Length: 68
Image 1: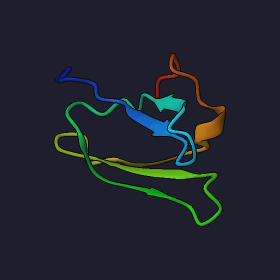
Image 2 (image 1 turned 90 degrees about the vertical axis):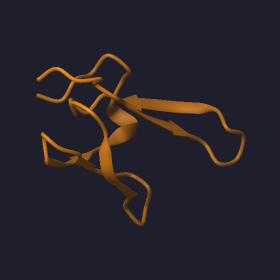
Image 3 (image 1 turned 90 degrees about the horizontal axis):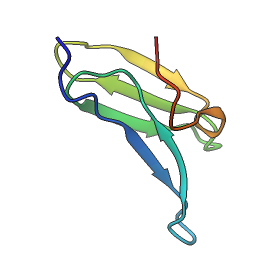
C-alpha cells in the first residue's frame, strides 16, 4: 500500500527556520513523535498499516533521505 507518504518537518523554535525534513517511509501518518532530552534524536511511531517505531538522528537527514 503506497498511501500518502507523509514527512516530518523540523523547525527551530527561536526563529522558525526550517531545519530538516524526515521522510520516514510511513504510508499514512504518525501516532506519536518525540525528541530526546538533548534534542538530537527523533522518535517516530508510524500509523496503520505500518505500525513501525523508528529513531532518527534528524540533524543528519536531508529532505531526500528515505527510511528503508
